[in-house]
Length: 323
Ligand SMILES: [Zn+2]
Image (tube, rainbow, N blue to C red; front, side):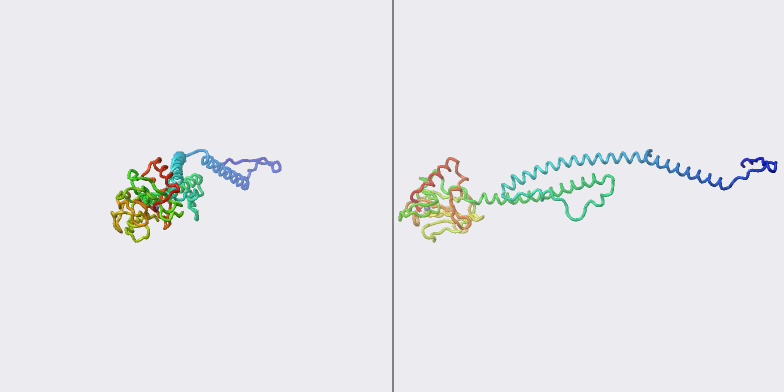
């Protein structure tokens, strides 16, 4: 119970009780409660923001560690990107050039993913930027690896084809150098041995004694071994695929038959002078896609640089062909 207070009333000359004014009490109570509430809120705010609970401390440490791990991941991605960039560089500038494939444009190698926002569920967090950027980098890396892998598959196929092409293409001299008397005449304008008229000589003449072995200049299939073509006498045609055919004319004897498969260097026949020929020699032609081309560029498989330059020199002399 609170004390009862009195006051002296000078009019009635007596002490009178002081009546507590209810309104004041109520006001005071309200202010007190409000102040307490405010203080409480302020305290909550203070502890919430500046004073960490052990759980919060642990979470914060975990978060820091996570950020640190992301940094390490990003460093590893730097390395992976550098290695892949080097592989892509070699791919574009060596492999694809060597195998005559177009380089893959940088935009295609580094293309991200278009359309829908793949990273939407990662948005709206404090670390969203870090996480989204890292995800993007990994996605691009993955895509680059797929592009690179496809390119290498393509190169592997091209390499296989190239191997076949390299084996097929006419690439050796059809008569051994030691058997040659001389390289009589090359591809170009030559005087005809019979009419002495200047005309196109579509092949190369290798002068050698009758019976000198003739070798297939590349892998292929014998498509003709007969004397049915006017002028060529007994002759052989080998289809090498890839648009290449080689022709060997004025033979003395065959060593292969039509439809027979041959390898480069196989003995296919012997030098003679059948058909329109002045003396024993091998008349040799190469066709590419049906057109006769200069065989001089197809001896890299068997000649040294010196031998080749000698051949080049004698082949370019405008003399009389043996036809
Ligand atoms: Zn000729």
